[in-house]
Length: 293
Length: 179
Image (cartoon, rainbow over all chains, first blue to last red):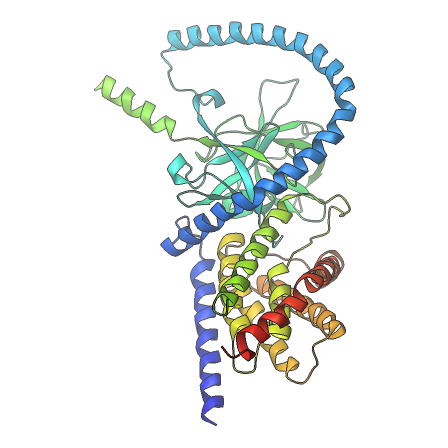
């Protein structure tokens, strides 16, 4: 009799604790508690050890697959190299010109990507529950990673840092974005100087494409145009490639244009990522302030 | 040895939890892209601990399930509590069921099947209430429930082959041998 009562009591208490925990963690939090930081870091540490042999094996398998294509790839790369040399030259010229022009204009701040510090990181794990679009990377606040920094790969933006512990961080992928963390973007029009601005407001699960909402109804938006982050809103730097427009349609009230965007980066296969550190800007601004005062 | 066994089981659980995260980041070749395969390795292992290791008066599997699911909640999700509830509650039900059932391979597989589907449905239902996802039932059972259960049954079979005998041996070492 006593045992049964006690058991019921324990079950009730644990239910209350669980509901409390869910309520506590459901809020939007940028900072984790110490316990969570500790769990993240210690699991991340073990994870890197466990990942070593697995990465080794998959590496070998991939190498064998790649060896077959090496010759053809080599030919293509050689031809690309020629182009690259030309590009490098023109890039140098342009950078020089840009600097000169900036000097003339007295403009020292620039929103270009080159002005940001980058932090290299590798993906150690992905959330096992796929309702959560997040991956874990092996760099944390000790390396300078802070919440809300943009995360990219070579081919484009993949998401932003959601939370960071001292030695690991969690990255929210683009397909997990919703209205509370939307990205301000520009659509690059090749035949006009003006870009069209809009917001990435979420992810369409059925189409597996990002939803782009234009700020105004615009008929110039077409398939195949490239979408870049615009740098407005202050969260992400300007010029990060996000994806390519796959489908255009008017929204329900025909007030704005909606487009569906395919992310340039493959969000399902991530190994090495780059975290973009925006913290450089305030330092520049400070110096400028000191100089002028 | 006698005192080490629970820690050994805990260590295996931890490694399985980590493997869940690692496997999710690899793209498996035979998987269709819209399938969501969720690995519940540690949970499947805890089912076998309940079936083959646990005595009537011990609560190793329940205690481990709280720890393991807390780690899963913290590391892999945003919301703490959903996996704790799903894992521990389902394990408790299995524990009660195992008082009347025999421990053999068919029962073990049946428990894996029922346990994994129950856990995954509870988790998805709770996340739907908490508005983590808005997928409907039709989408859910075709794209997530069936692949997940099949995947975990395969892994369960593997874990059974590796650990079933060992767990019952550990159980006799831990509880029955007098020394």
